[in-house]
Image 1 (cartoon, one colour):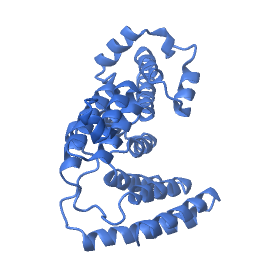
Image 2 (cartoon, one colour):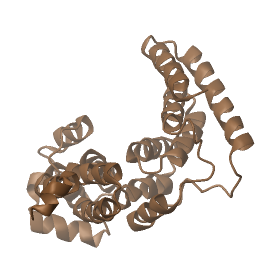
Image 3 (cartoon, helix red, strand yellow):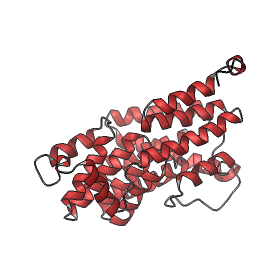
Image 4 (cartoon, one colour):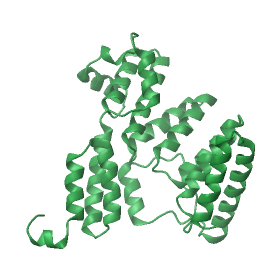
Amino acid sequence: MDHTELTDELERAEGLLLQGRAELARELLARLAEDAEEYVDRNCPTTDDVQWFSFPTIFERLAYRRVERDPRELRDVGEPLDRLYNDLALACVHDGDYDEAMEALKQAVRWNPMDCGYRLNLADLFRVSGDVQEYLALTYSVFERASDARHLARAFVNFSGWFASSDKPRVAAAALRAARALGVTDATLDAALEQAAGTERDPDLVDDAQMEELLAAEGLPDGANAEIAVCLLMCAGDAAAVGARDVATSLTLRARDLVGEPAARALLELIHQSDEEVADGKE
C-alpha cells in the first residue's frame, strides 16, 4: 500500500470514528497496523528497537535525524504510520481499552519521536492508570524536544496539576504563569486557568521573578522554548549552508512558532534569497 492508499484508508477510519462507529474503525486500523509492521519486518533491515521511553536531548535527536533515519522506518509510507497508531489509540479509548491505547501511542511515538502531542497523550493515559513516574517523565521530555509553544504550555499545565496534587500550590501557580506567558490559545490551559482563579494556584499570585525561582527549585526548565528555538535555528543555518533549503525552512518555522518572528524571519530571508541578491551584497 503506497502513501496515497494508506492515507485514504486512514481518512475512512477517521470518518468511522466521527460517525461513532469506533469498533469498525478499530478493526480497520488494527488491520492496517498489522500490515504495516509485517511490511517493515519483511523489507527493512532489522536493528535493535529504539525504546520509546528513551529521551535523548534536542541536540542528540537533531544530530541523529541529520545523520541517518531509523533503518526500520517504512521508506515508501513514512509519515502516515504515526497518524495510524494515534487513530488506533483514539479508537481504543472510545472502546474503553486504555491498555491497548497505551500500546498504540507508544508506537506513534516510535515512528515520530519529535511530535510531542503523542507524548502528552501517552502521559495522560499513564496518569489515568496511576503510573505517576511515566506521566512525569513523558511530560518532562517535552522540554527536551522540538515542540511548538502549545505543547510546552500543555506540559506546564501537567506539572501545575501535579504540584497542586502534591500540596505545592505556589509552584502550581508558577507553572500556570509560565504556560500563560507562552501566549498560545489552548483549551486545556484555559480550563486550568479558570479552575485556579481565586485559589492558591492562581498564577497572578506570583510574579515573573518568583515564577523562575519556584520552577528552578523544582528542576523545570523555564524558558526551554527559547533554548530549543536557538538549537533549531543553528541546525537550520547548517542545513541552509549545504543547500538543504526545505529542511532549513522547516526547522526555522518550528523555531518561529516558539519564539516569534524577528530571528526566524531574518533567517528565512537569508535562506531564500537568490544568488543574485547574495552577489549584490545583501547577505
